[in-house]
Length: 129
Image (tube, rainbow, N blue to C red; front, side):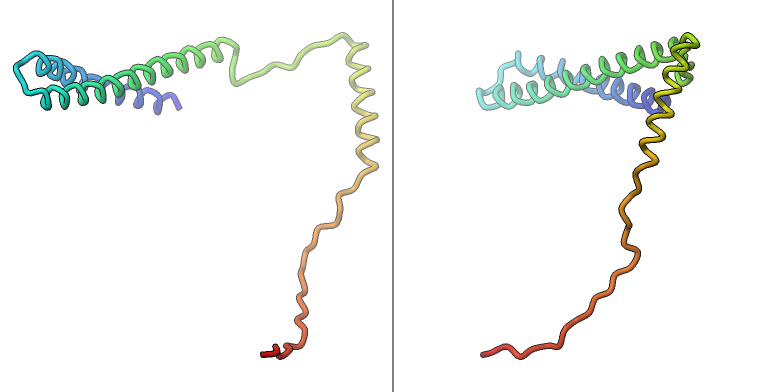
């Protein structure tokens, strides 16, 4: 999974590296002498590029959060999860409860499951016209 996240981060950073000069170019175009129609087209393209930049930056932030969560999990000993220790009396109480639950569970059986199906068709009947 770590390799996938690294590849995704690299891909996202590369996309931002392509997008950034395009945004600068659109900013430059918006400052030159163009018709109103051309300026509207440039502004529309700038909005599309801005939206994509925001989404890419959000993805990079989320990937950084994932990396921090992975580090926190590793610091917590993941994937191992040690058994909890309890006082002997508590252990005996839990053991007694498990025995009671097992005894109660033994009183149940699952319903039978169909293992075959037989279909008997009747005699065809003429339909009135």
